Image 1 (tube, rainbow, N blue to C red):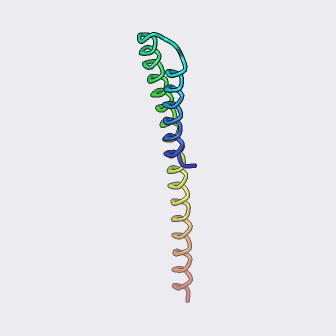
Image 2: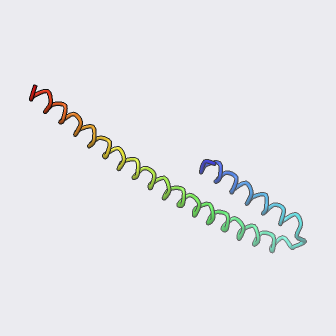
Image 3: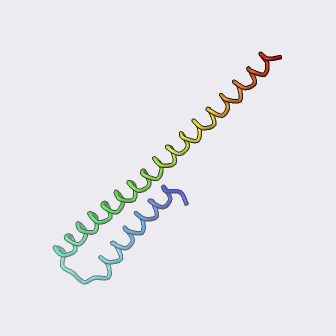
Length: 90
């Protein structure tokens, strides 16, 4: 599952949960507004945490790919140098 799909599902699930809570709980308007504000803050906090986790994982993948790319580049350069040596010796 991609990080984008997960984040979208996470946000939609949070919104559905908040709406269900509002509809099912008999509270005054003031209490409902306070609950909405708290729920919104909680959803925003969780979304921010999820985005940070996804970013950290993406950074790790990019770093690993750069490292592998450098290793491949080095191996290719060594192969080219060996071929040049063989060609010069013949």
